[in-house]
Amino acid sequence: MTLTGDESTTLNPLTLMESAREKYTLARARREVPELALLSIHGAIEDTLRAHLLRLHSPAALGPFAGVIAAMQALEQHPLSADEADAVQRLHRLRGRIARGEHLAVTGETLAAYQRLAVMLLPRYGVQVVPDTEPARRRATQPMRSQTALPDDQPVRVQVRDRHTAYEEAYRIRSLGHRAFEANEDRRLLVPGWVAPALIVVSIFVIGLAIALSLQNPAPVAPPVAPIVTPSPAATAMPTSAPTIAPGAAVTPVAEPTITVEPTPLPEGLAVGRIAFVVEGIPALNMRAQPGLRADIPVLLVLAPGTQVEIIGGPVEQDGRVWWQVRSAGTEGWCAGDFLEVR
Image 1 (cartoon, rainbow, N blue to C red):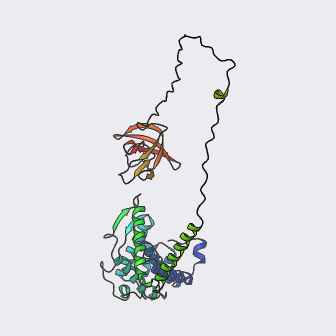
Image 2 (image 1 turned 30 degrees about the vertical axis):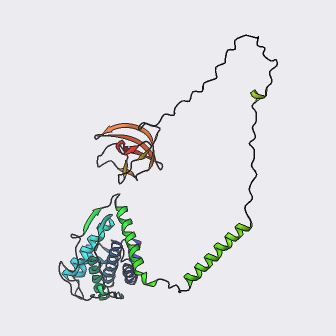
Image 3 (image 1 turned 90 degrees about the vertical axis):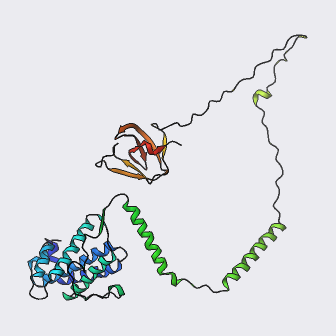
């Protein structure tokens, strides 16, 4: 960061040193999320170096971070070694990649190495921190080793954030929950041995009491109610004069009216105005801003199997597929018709 204006005038070494101590403490609390822990470690080291340069009245303290590292290497007392400067620069590159939105699968070795770097640098420049007490992180005073002590960002698996990142993060959150449950497994509440038999006896008593009450007070049986038939006006109307039939005359029967029931047409396929569903058997279906499979067409929504959509336009042939314009959750876009069905 480059500090200018009012922000640079209000900063002082004590403020930065206190900020570095808080960020280091926050990094220890963020071990389960290594990316956030790396950001906190980087902030603690940067604030410590800038505070030291401010105490020496160096103009590089408020400049770019590359100038801060160069100024720390040029100090006469307690300068940064070449390996330490290289490690801080690699941490700065990792911090930039995380800030740009890249998804870094940071290993535990990488996080532990940068935490050891912070434990070495912060006390050297006046920021007192509490060393980590875990066995895996006790080697805080080990000497620096070039290219091996602090893993760089090259061996770290990098993946640009996309719509699948949410599924990976949800899986990691669930795995963290399982580990927390296993860690607290030994803290389960011990139930006395007499509780289970007492619950069984109470349950039997309650069930018997309910059966006895039901036998003493049988439920009343409702008397049968005869259906009330309301005669239609046509049936109750009396003819004004009785028809006369001459003896021996032939009686012509009257044909009864025929009721024609039109069959309800079943949906045959996709059409504008119909309701469709995303077919089962696929991971998800993309709703795009325009029909087509080009990489520059943005994806508006990711529809799960079985999601209901309303067809509002189409069809349009593009990139070897037939596309339909649909609406779902208030968003309108285009989906491939191969993955939609009318039920």
